[in-house]
Length: 331
Image (cartoon, rainbow, N blue to C red; front, side):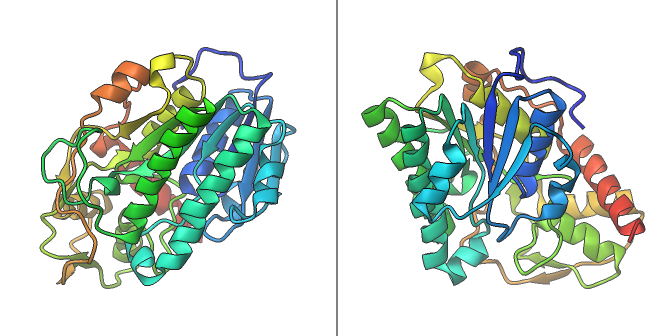
C-alpha cells in the first residue's frame, strides 16, 4: 500500500507518536510514516486489542520504537509523549456492543484515557494532536449526508465516549491553545483488521466466515447503510492533519469517509462475488445502539485538510478480500 504520498514536508527530523499503534488503523499509520522516512515513530499500546503481529515487521527499523503502557495511567502517557512533535491518538476501546456490555470500561479508556493523553501532550509541547472520533456521535440525527455541526443524541456508551472526546478537545484547544484536530471515522476497513473475537468488525468477519463455510449473521434486515471507508483514506487524513499548519483547521472535527453509502446486504453480496461464493447469511434481530443509515459530507475535510479519498468502496474491498484470502491461505 501507500504508493501515493500524502505529505510534502521532510519527515526525517520529526518524531511521531501513534497511540494504539499495534491496532488496525494505528499500524497502518505507522507503516506509512516509516515507509516515508519519519525520524522517529513511537507506538504506545497496552495490547488489549492491538497485536504485536501488526507491528513485528517494523522492529528492525531504527526509527521505530514500541512502548507498552496504559492510557489510564497518566505517567505512562507522559512517557509516551516525551520528545514527540506529532500525535495520532488511535487508542480506544471500540465496538458499540462492547460499550453496552462494559460502559465503565469504555469510559475509563476512551474518556479518562483521552484526558490523560491530552494533558501529557500539552505538557510535552506537542505541535499537533490528532485523535480518532467516530460517526457514531451523530446518533439519532436522521438527515443525510452527515455534516459536522449537526448531531443528535448518541445511542451507545461508545458514541457518548467519542462525543466526550470532542468536547474535551474543544476545551483544550480554547483554554490551552493546543493544535487539535478530530477525525470522525465512518466504518473504516482494510488489511490488519481483526476477524476474530466477540467484537470483530463486519468485513473481516464476513470474509472469514464465508471462507470457512461457517454461519454468517446479518443484524436486522441488512438494509442499513454505511459509508464504508478503506483504511488508506484514514491514513491520509491522519497524515494531513498531523502536518497541518492551517490556523483555521485547528479545534475542528472532520468527517473521514468517501461520500458514498452501501447497505450491509450490498456489502455481503460484493464479498460473495469476490470470493465466488453462494454462502447464504442468517438474519437476526437488530443490534442495540446501531445507527440505521450513515453517509458523510466530506467537504470540510477536503477544504481545510486537503483530504481526497483515493479508494472507493469497490477498490478498497477488492484489496481487503485479497489480503484476507492470502492470510488464510498461508495458515
